[in-house]
Length: 340
Image 1 (cartoon, one colour):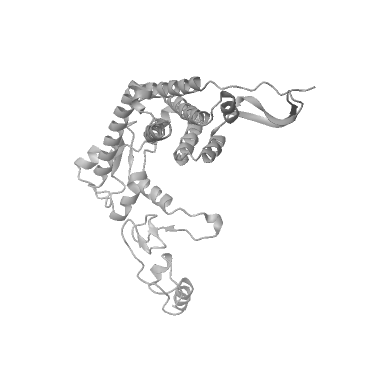
Image 2: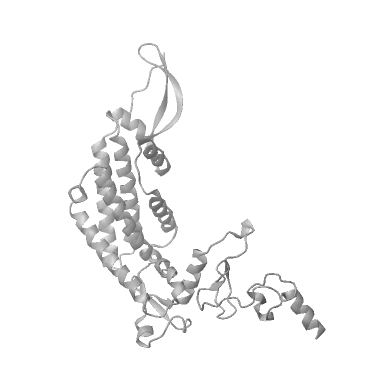
């Protein structure tokens, strides 16, 4: 006669200890990577440990939602297909076999939804995405990206520990929490300075919406600021786009700021060409930048607007490209030129 297998149990205190240990290791690695730029090998280790620590903390929260260690194990461990078993009373029961591996992020989402636990998984998914990218790229190329990710992790940890575990982050993490606050305060202060600096260098007013999302093309850091030499020469981005440079405070890379702004404008007005919709961003015939927003009928760089709205002959809509025909559509302009 087959009998029910002995149930798994879960050491919840050990789970919490492992979570905090991973977070501490992640912050220690990040601190070294942040302070000593030669320790690039610690970048990937930091993100791995922090991501692992967050998931373990999530699992700990799930595990304490039930009373017994056995029930906690059933929520945390992955399962195989349920098999029929016979208990000590001769009754058939169906119990999934618990595997030796624990649930991943998609199952955590399901458990949180069941338990009505609210977490910003958009940020967690971004961290997972970039962690996977870092797994396949040299960490040296991504120190800047890590800085931004770390800044996103801090408020998640703070709010989760406060609201879901009803604990004080400083008490739970000790000195590690003070290090996190110090690093995050420095990042936020530096980031705000960078954003404020770009307001003073002649970026076209409409293009300012792109500034918060531009980042270094070498390391993906968003801590980029006007290059001191461009500032010293009193250059203006709008009028000297081929000269005005930025400098990255993370990796010291220098580059032109205008291409980053134009690229981000394309992201702001992104469209899927496979949907059959026309492009939202066109090349402006006045400044030659890819900055003319079709739906607003205006260039975000030079503020050029279409002078001729419809053909003087057939009254058809005149595109940006047809403005050179001075009020005629391409068909009637071609006919007119042919007659000449």
